[in-house]
Structures are given as structure tokens and as C-alpha cells.
Length: 129
View 1 (cartoon, rainbow, N blue to C red):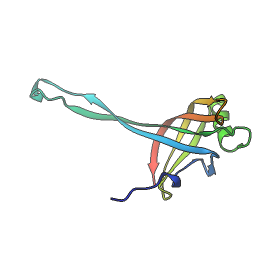
View 2: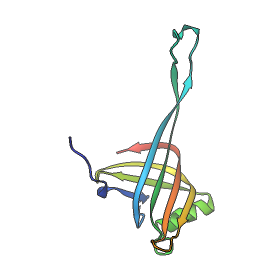
View 3: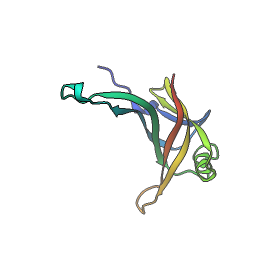
View 4: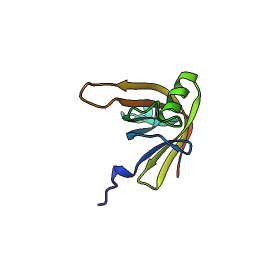
């Protein structure tokens, strides 16, 4: 079995790589509607309904030094505008979609660097390429 090293990942806004991102998580979901009925012979039955996606990106804080990345995420949140997010996996494949920035968290500890994370909520389709 072959594994892919996480070091080849990336997170971009459009064509611009967001600086100092150490990791991301992408969640792709299909909602299911319970359609169980008397004829289901005691087994729960499901029907697919709506697909959605969301994610997080985190790393070291660099809002003031990254106008096209972390600052653009912050500006989109404050302005209520959408962004084009590109999650790069394995150095070859991408997941791309339009999203809103739902939340930004900045953390600071005396014995660490300042950290940054953004919660991203997709609007519309997510495309795999």
C-alpha cells in the first residue's frame, strides 16, 4: 500500500497560495432523508438529498504580511463576500469551490507562535480535478 505525504498539500484563494498554512480539513457531505415505512421490513431506508462541503485551514498567523491570502480571508469574512477556495491534495489533485468564510480564530500563547484558523462554508458545487 502506498501513502501520500501531507507535505505536498496547499490551500489557495483563486490562484494565490495562502501563506503559512500548515494544514487543512475538507468535509464533503451528502444529506440523507429517512424514508422508512411499514414495507421496510424493520430496516431503516434512506434517500439522498442535498450535497454540501465545508473546511478549515490553519497555520501561523500572517494577516499583515499576506494581502492575497490570510488578509483576503479576513477581508472576505468582514465584508461578507465569497472566495474561490482551492484545496490541493497530493501535489496533483484539487478540490475547488466558492465559499464564505464563516469564522476566523487567532490564538496566542506566550511559549508559541501566533496561530490562525479559518472555517470555510461552501456555497454551490465542489469540483475535483
